[in-house]
Length: 103
Length: 320
Ligand code: SF4
Ligand code: SF4
Ligand code: SF4
Image (cartoon, rainbow over all chains, first blue to last red; front, side):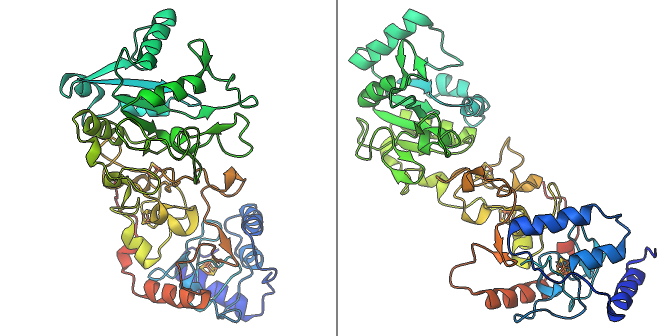
């Protein structure tokens, strides 16, 4: 797997563009459901990009009626274009979204 | 010279530990510089058994004046209101508290247990614990809401789990030096001088709070602990980032969220699994939204704050 964040970002973008089916639903409504997704993510090999995207429910566009985006997610680091949720820890674009989105 | 008596009910002795660590002034300074005569204290008192009982009787009868009655720990009422689970000097501690509170010039509750019940009074509260004048947020407690000490003040509440050493000694000194009447108390009878500002006041992570950069793990030097780790700094009345712990640090400076230990509801959510160290959210947004802000507005505000954040806000800072 490429280790440069720029390269990883491109790899993720290509996978999403190619129509990778991810588990966008169900959105974790409660903290318990949120924690259950984190548990699944922790069982993955940290380099398993595809696994992270699928379980995280990634999409490469804003999501839902409120047009939620990584941009306002608490885990998004604007300058590094990085998802800082330890279980994901991947580069992301501000206009993307995943179901672990929180503000 | 002011006579001080310190007793412990349902407690872990944490406030005693805290008190013995005081520096400004120290426990020794209280005696040597401020004329405080410690009649008895669980860790410092010399009398034992019958001698102690005689001293307590003499205080209750008025033969020995007690200027400051400090109580640490809950008043234990179990089983069935008898208080037999917490006996001291030949009778239930609750009976001593009732008698001593009547003759005290000032009564001071130290720590959450004595102020509003704290952890022992958390549901299902098997020890039937309550604080001196509150049970959680409810006014009343063991002494009743109309209680005042001989000086005319209600119980002076110094909450905390434990209370900071200086909060304890500074209040004791104020009372012992005749400035007790100057103390102004808030609605929970906490001295305003300590409990008007918030834990967040003086927190080194305030910029991260404003720019909505989150700390995602304990001990991280970047990020605010509010968004993910359940920091209660913005809603907790305490001077923890003004009067530092051990003179050098605080929970939030060390990367540990404020648990809100100076508020009557502590420990929050009755310690239900998954509620500690976690910001409670509904559909990805904080359960406790700032008043008057809806979710769509909050999303916009967040995006604007993040867009304006400087690069350093994302770096690990040396914050201690
Ligand atoms: S957790 Fe937040 S920043 Fe990370 S990918 Fe999901 S929406 Fe984006
Ligand atoms: S860490 Fe806690 S006290 Fe500090 S700024 Fe964040 S919410 Fe406020
Ligand atoms: S930081 Fe919060 S939990 Fe810690 S001592 Fe201060 S008020 Fe209590």
